[in-house]
Length: 591
Image (cartoon, rainbow, N blue to C red):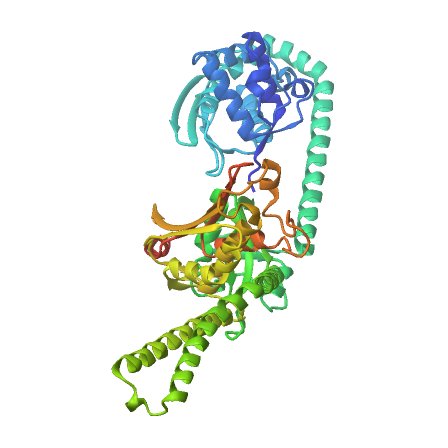
């Protein structure tokens, strides 16, 4: 696997040039993983390639495109590789110098790059320098390399070589023609210098070897730690290469009722998605946006088992030398079950809170029906035979029967609403007009609201949505109850609760507004926390808004509150209209 770092010696050379040119090195290194002070003290630190590239690009901009000449001057005049040059000049041989550069020092200092060297006999060599596709390109790096290769013989007292180069994307090819060798006398003098320098050079090589060994040991330890953490993680972890699973931990296998992670290796990721879930597309979305996505996984060996709901995150990385997508899967079955219990608890509490008002709502039409039936009963006591009644009396009987029937139908409607909001069971989305849920909630909450405020409704057409009618009614009901509980009956004629529906930007909107006391910013920040409530004991559990937001987001919508002290509260539900949801689904499937 190509390393993403380089040794610090070439970075130190760039830092020295920046200092020579009077640049602000701190500014050049800002935001990078590059401690330029520590780098100047040692040649064996590891520096991320990305940081090195950005540092060079900033220097190039600061020097107005003159970075390469400045680097070359420093390379030739200051000779930062003196020990290397002395040993390379042991026989005053440019071949030896370049061999050491291309086969030892270049690959060692730049492990991120690949060196393909072709010897051209005694006249020179050709080297192709290539960067892997998963790292940042750096054209100025190639230009610097070309100048360094051309001037390298100057380090051992020779003339520069002749150099030809071709630059491409992430790649450069250099052909170097060796300069003439020195005289015999010059060679003897160089031999003496090299012998004197050999001890220091060997010590430098030994130190470098120790550093590399330490780096290798640290890398091995890091890989072992990573594998241990992944294997013991309670979350499922999978690694994908081109949508094929190349690694999976045992936690993911257990999640899918398998014995171990190796059973998943080689599977295509699309085979794990439950119907309607593009797992590959959702993971790419999670990786691009850096956010968790919700999806469901199919249990491979059991078509009758329920799909497993998970919360997934993903990131790009290198794994076993390949570009990979690493995904973590958190099983949220228990969380979904807890949320379902919280929703049921909130619904039952709301039903208990409204019991008196519902009793009143039922008693009113029943009393109306009873009064009409009593009138008919009294009339028939005096005249048992309807045929003996005059036309006006017969019309009164028929009108009373119709009124009694209307009252009973109203009571049946309220009982049906009571049954609908109180029942448990399937809560999957259905196509509905949000006004149906609003009207159902209003029948329940009307009596509670009218005790403390006037009620105004403006239910305009807002399009169809995909949601649960029962759960959407529960959300609207919670908002109406909160508005009613926020106000005092002492100001009943001044208090106002408004509920409106309208369409906006491919969304169906429901707004519940009140002119009550409003909320402070501190309260507004916490209202969606579970069990947080400002109501007096016995009037709420603190689950209402928390549950309401979860329900709305489950169907792709949002619940937003606006409030100021003394200026009331506005709650807005936004749900995507059915055609917008259908269009998005079609686009996702096509991609």
